[in-house]
Length: 407
Image (cartoon, rainbow, N blue to C red; front, side, top):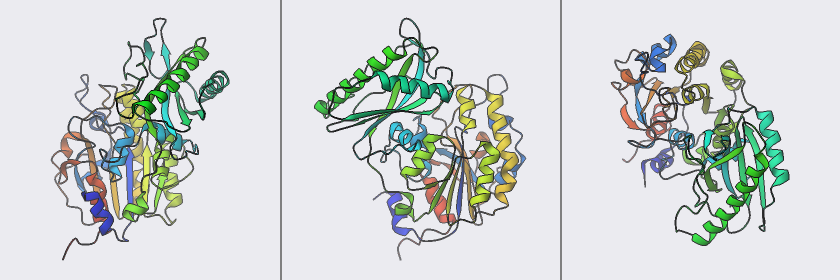
């Protein structure tokens, strides 16, 4: 038994928990300013909260491991990410309300830009608008025919992102990402990722390779989205949800499809997409008197700005959240957690392995000497440096939702 299973055994009704997750929150000092986005931001409400909370840093997966958004959020929700592995494709499919069936093989797709040599020049095709994405998905579906006793689906997600689903017998998710995660290189060839389950993996790899060959032919005359990259292959099987594991009746307030998909996978009720940061705080006020005892609020803009290398914009998103915080505090949640699912330093323009700052405010949270909510200050906080999946246990305990262990 690991510790998270013990939480299941000890779970009991108690107070209300709110998670405010600013995606990609953590960062590094900029070479130009010597400050991270959190250090640059004028965030008096976050700083006041830090003074009245337990603060620290969390390593989402483990030392030196750069987490994707899926494992990052699973860890925050108390799912040890090396035990509970859920592919990005499954999360993206659920995020667009695609009716996945057990055994479906799903992958996340990026429309990308390729040069004449076949090398990637932009992994996101300039973040094409969603209307163009829909047209390209329709074009691919009209052009691609797969010779196997099953079905395939190719659906738009948002901007440059789409979802591929294969449905049939004998499929394997032992497949590599075709996205090399960098430009100046061609997409990775599709082949089984290991010798395990080789017949099924070889069959699945041939199907995906055939899909990609035909899709690239259909996109050849398009610009800037003339290529496809696939990642996060997984066959769908539903894990136990937050209600089953921790007795939580949970609500998701998120606009971005993948996070809505993850929430739905874990049994959360997913509210209509809030519009912008103001809309996110409107939504928590609107739903506060509903029968939820765990509320997950998601902010995407911090991560998008970090991935674009835009330090000033990332700081501005933090400031916009900070401005709205008094509305959340006026609701008096029993436990408030503010953190991120991973670090996205603007200086790296990518996810990174660096620990993420966290604060936990509750009646019995130990106060520390942290006076500003940022990376360096939080290192000296009462929570110290700990695994990301510890956070759910701490939130449950501070909400008095865990019984005593043993006599």
